[in-house]
Length: 412
Ligand SMILES: Cc1ncc(COP(=O)(O)O)c(C=O)c1O
Ligand SMILES: [Zn+2]
Image (cartoon, protein in one colour):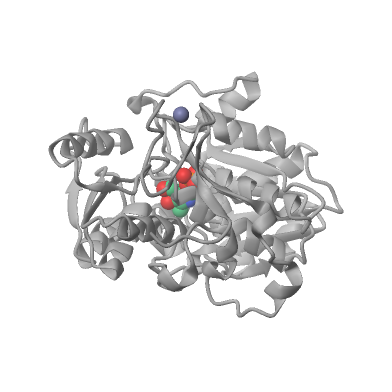
């Protein structure tokens, strides 16, 4: 297995034991906890100046802080996404600057590509021939693409509520797609999780690239924060608002912010804000009640059109809550109406396309600014985790509803 110089192994976030990455491939062999890639930062000679001289081609620009070198990566050019100034949103929000980190520019249209690039590289290094995961939709599509690139067979388990694009492209990439049977009309991520778990029992040789089962997805996603900080000349913004489902990206970004501070590249952590939909906000509820972990929602309590954040039982909520509290960020929930209106406002005022799920970051930032969390001198970053055209049904349906409402008002 070829790894980078400073990568020393995988440390369990629960029991603290460190394992060799060749032998430990997924959860902690001792206690089943989440494994986290660990580095010896003294062995990292990289500086912001040396980085400046390096081309901005992909997330592998930062490979000293990743487990695998760029040369062996399963890559489609993921990362190096733009940070776009949003003056109209800054005005409307009453803050100094709003910047949108546009992950829609990734190969399959979402930030999931970063996680699957890292996890699929690990799969190939471990000699896997088949990979599997369940997902809300976008990670499944990304896994299908990266498995194709790595010449691996992929088994993808999605809920029936996943979008048409995500299901279609999973099959276009050649993956074996299972859509979990609908229960009361529409299946949820948990149903896809059950179908995946049953298949894994039958096929223990399948290599999982599922959220926080592989140690490498949050590691790939942490490059969003490294890029963001580089784009801001290593000056931490006053807040990153992040549409939070399983929290993989948020936890990864917080790790990178800690690493940048450890390496002396930044002075401060990046305040991370978890944005959720009011119809599925287990992390926000836990944050507000001061709890260390979430209380799961029942599937039939989930009530949001935002597929990527319709996650009623986020297993790593303790890591999300720790990241939010340690970085002096927060958590905010807004209604689907506010979220979908925000997506349309961004598309009309800035010309940018944000997914329905991703717009929770926009409406969440508005709510935070309104509550006084962000002020007139603050720089606020909206993490647009995916392209607008991946959730086109939800956005178009919302426009339709607004038209019907406007007509009804005109008739009054
Ligand atoms: C577009 C989009 N945004 C956000 C999320 C939530 O991701 P995370 O697990 O990082 O919270 C997802 C997950 O499916 C997604 O597809
Ligand atoms: Zn452990």
